[in-house]
Structures are given as structure tokens and as C-alpha cells.
Image (tube, rainbow, N blue to C red; front, top):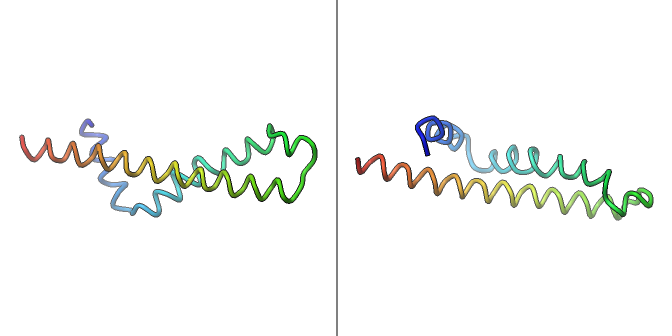
Length: 89
């Protein structure tokens, strides 16, 4: 992790992990995927149904949350590794 990435993550993590989950997971991944899949998905091509819409909303928002959580912990791991290297040097 270079200095620019280190400082960017340091600033981002200060805003909190739940905000990160919402912005980078649900809003940046889950919501766009929901919209894209609504246009190319088989249940919607046969006609719009409430059941299909509910399944898509739940699936893609949970996928976005999972993506956000995964990215948080991956970035935290890299940050802590870089932090320990910086403190040893």
C-alpha cells in the first residue's frame, strides 16, 4: 500500500464502517446491479411481478452489503499490514 492509498484509507475509515458499507457496498454495487439485472433478468423479461421485484431487491442489496463488508475487511487488513511495516521501519 503506497502513501497515497494509506492516507486515503485512513481518512475513509475515520468516517466509519457502517457508512462504508452503505456507500461503497449498497449504493455503489448493490443498487446499480439491481437496476442492471432488472433489465436483463429472465423474471422481468416475462413481465413485471411484485414477487420478482422483491427477490431482486433483497438479493442485490444483500450482495451489495456483502461486497461492502468484504472490501472493508480487505482494506483494513492491508492498512494494518502497512501500518505495522511503517512502525517497524
